[in-house]
Image (tube, rainbow, N blue to C red):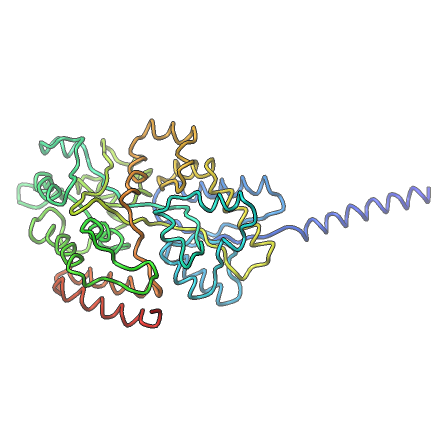
Length: 428
């Protein structure tokens, strides 16, 4: 009995030791995630993280919903400066230079070990990688990526005598169709505008659609030089201003980003520019038949890419870095990527996702989901520089000054370029 008692004690000790070892081996990851558009983003992230945790019981993922993109990068930097950074976060792709400058993130290349890892790193659309790489290193992995697209109300088009299946393809057609789409009441008050291009929230991003269409780039790929005062930029901004002041097809003043989908649903505008990340929101809430198309062109077609990347924070243990790397690889695989795209409307960032049975069934049923993917052929990198928040704030202020008429287009852009030069001088 004594021998059996000792054996039983030994078994209990081994079990206790195994439990302690398992607990010690568990890896905890804190994951900051922004929710920037309508749809099922938060629910889907929870489903995906729960699915990964179930398949990887040694990894615990705490998904922290950090608010807007701006809130998320601020919280991540504040936590990093306080010595308690997240291990992983989705942050705007354009914040890459800021995160590098703050020395809080690491390149994914440092975690690549196998040929499979190398192939994965090469599996994303080149247009999205422009805002994910610098200096020969990959710092961000595309996840909730987007481009702005054109949405139009087919019923409004038919009512105005326009072909409901043919949106404007040029700047001039936007004006011509916009004038027919404007609707007024008996007192002459506008009840429906022709088009709505938001100038709050992410004003530089939607404006970059116009600059790209006018064949001009706002910043270099090194993130240390802007091109705000270029005459082609001024021409694009004058066009935006003229949509309201001269052609009267768009409401005057600053147009709110967040209120734009609701204005579209309620028939206050016949067309709108917004993120493809709003696609599921529009599909679920528009009470009319709508279309989705490429942004109208001028000298060329074009749009900026946008949205968020995964970043791994450098102040983490080796085990946490490896676990974070494995999670990013897993969630960006075609099956998970397809689930995310279908739930939210964001653009699946790798070609093989579009070849899955789920995505083919989705796009066969809902062809507008292909528009943003097809627009990648004409896409350019979103405006991104060192000190990005300061530089874009300067540029956004210039856009607002021109839109509200407090400064001329040329003066506003010249001042913005001067301020950007002062900020970026040390990085050149």
